[in-house]
Length: 343
Length: 232
Image (cartoon, rainbow over all chains, first blue to last red):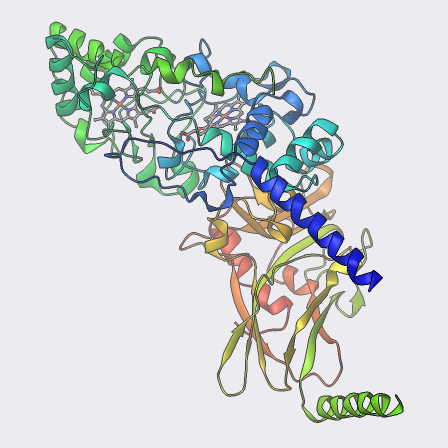
């Protein structure tokens, strides 16, 4: 009799603990406009909790991920510039090493079907392995990170809050980073408000004309509403012979992919200079200069660009004015995405 | 009181009889890595068929998606049956399936390597956790088979050879579905791994490093079933 009693007390205890833990978890909502396509990402491995989001946020901003504790993800992906690295054509990493590519913006990643300029990464959950192991970026290994995190009281607590288990694994680390970056969604620019007929979305004649020009000349690749078709295209940039980066071909080993790069989103483009995979253009004027007069012919040049894009000086201005409507200050200054001071 | 005990014994006895009559056996495989007929050890010299002297420092590979096909053709795939075997870590050579039984003559199927679906499924756990050092980062996907060591025949730095065999996209797939019949007289079943077979068609003088998916990797992957003396 006595025995049964203790067991049942234990049972109730466990039950209460479970209940407590479940109540503690706060869900995070993955929001997006209803007229957008469905995300490509399958969220099933994420807990979609505030706890995992905050854990991922801590990891994202913590140089603990690099070999010598100097570089964090945020070193190359700054919120105020659409989570890319400004003023650097090629990204800078550990020991001041310079990588071979321009850092990418991080936004609306749940819709991406591949990652990196060459699409070499096939799934967002494993994307972080690339910067973590790159000798020029963080020069570390997931094994070493897991060991460091398992030795950290702070992280053991944060992982416990997510999984009711303080043991850190590679998978859990990657999922937490994913839970953070996948929430970095931008859909409140002036352009979005214009599409939704919302206050603050009133377009000027110039902006309207810019949108028309954009739809005629650019939107086949920079497809609305995400401003990328997710395709790989050669836009006729001359090869930089100091880098000899042939893009997609490096992954597929297929000649027909030579010089093709991922079509990047143009959201928040006003703030994400420099532009292109090697950061060769400082300004959007230079980008337009390229599309109108700089295209180099080659076998793999995108068919959309075989014929010259003709824009009058006024039209260029209108197009540039339109591109500014893609800036989303709600996103760029969202406090939930910045350095985690007080958690 | 006594009667109760008697019933218990009877139950045990009948269970025992039942077990010995049915031919069902628990599945347990032991991988036996050898070079020619020698047991393979780390940092020990061996000589290949092509007369290259070699030593091994690392030999790890995935065996995944085990499945049993009964003699009547019915199939049972064993859930979560993914193993990362490290030849120099004794306990990983034992593949234990505590809940799986088979009868003599059944067929066992499995993959050498990791199938495409799991290469494109993001961050996985357990044997497939990317922190196990068997995952490429700049181009997503598992290294199915990793063999490293040295040989004076290699013109590389410190005479090292490194074969990281992987890749899941056509036409350069490297994962091999193989099968063999479970009729070994002894238990557990030993599965010999003939590492010398790996070097049969490799001239270490010319070929000592494969670190990316592609044609070369797929050519080598095609020889892997021979190492295990199983059928494709």
